[in-house]
Each structure stands twice: as structure tokens, then as C-alpha cells.
Length: 265
Image (cartoon, rainbow, N blue to C red; front, side, top):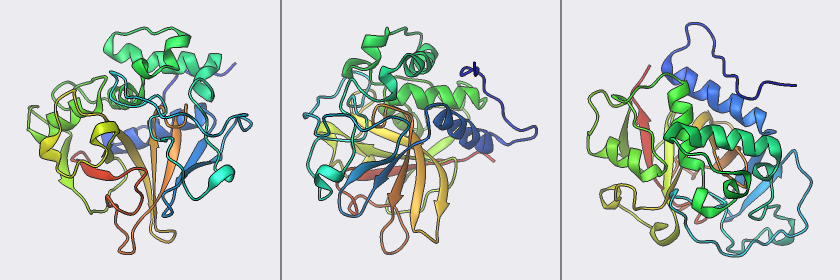
């Protein structure tokens, strides 16, 4: 049986390279699910290890203490894809499998929490931020560079306000072009259309962030991996604007707010 807890990185890899490599390893362990975030305001699963669920129109969900909705980056608002847009309702998807539960519990352990398998699928235990925190620790970042937290807004505010002695990230506004190893972040819920990073509150602003793993100039997309994305660790394939930039307008499903620019090699 594969050791899903094992993480290895190439000898001599830089911290930035480790972040990307570990995110990709985790994505593959979860079955390599892909979500296309298109220019038609859609956000549809285009590749999944699981069959399509019976229900494909989840109800509107509220934001839990973890800073993300249970389906951390797919909301119930309709889009042009209609019935053909595959989405996994809460309580389904890879996080509802025994393997998915064990892997999500690993992420929660980075902040000293131990939810059971039922809790892992609930909004109060949304695990997208602890996924990011876990990846950063596995890549070797210490408390002087990145503080773990169960809310994305915690580490975003740390970076924005220069809290840490040797910060690994700094905030850059959009539009912009991310690079592999950067984080891209959006407001959610009541703060979905937040337009100024200065308004983000520490641990109080609902957000979602992904780790950029590739910028495909030919296809004009960014590929980024996030946790609790359609009930799994998924790769978001995000259409860029006509200038080849990420912005807060091209897709209203995730109005991107900022880039956390990776300062590491």
C-alpha cells in the first residue's frame, strides 16, 4: 500500500522548488483532480478520480472558522456550463473517502487539531488553509518565514504587515503575473469582492489561496494547487485575461485579490 504520508524532494532543490514539488505530490496522492476556472465565470471539474455525483448543484454554503467554505473554491451560483459542469457537493468527493480523510487529518495536525472523518467534510473544519501551512512546513519554512494557521487571512496579514523577521512572501496587488511558488488569493463569502488587501483582517476575513505550480503562456492559463477545492486537493487551471495577467474581473467565481510573491530562491 502506498505511503501517503511520505514526502520527498530532489536533493539540492530550492525552497521555492520544494513548495511546488510537494504541492504536486499531494495533488497526485488525491487522484489529480482538475478544476477549470474559465472566462465564462464557470468553475467545473474536468478530471477526477471519482465518478460524477448524483447531485451536481450544491446548496449555498456558509463560511466556517477555517476561513473557507466547505467547498473551498466552488460556490453554488449558477454558471453558463449548466448541467454539464461537474461539481462535488459537500460530503462527497475525495475528502469523504477513508484515504482522503487520513490525508486531510495530516494537514490539521500542523495546527494541533484532530478532526474526525465526519468533521473533515464540514464547513467548520474547512482545511484549505492548513493544507497551505502543511506544505510550507514540509518545504522547510520556519516560524521566522511563515506562521501556520487555520485561516488564509492569518498568513496574508503576516506578509502584508511585515510581521515576521525573515518573511518568505510579500503582498502584491493585481493585475499581475504570478510565478511558480507564489500564492494567489481571493476573498470569499461576505468579502468575495474585497478590492483592497489593506482591508483584510487577521483571522476574520474569509479567503482562499492556491499554490502556483505553472504559468502556461501558450495556453494563457495559470495552474495552481489548493486544498479543499471541490472536496479534494485539486489543480485549478485558471484562464488569464487578454494581457496574460491574473485579475479580479475575468472570472467572478474567484475574484482574485492579490499575489503572495515568493521571496525565496
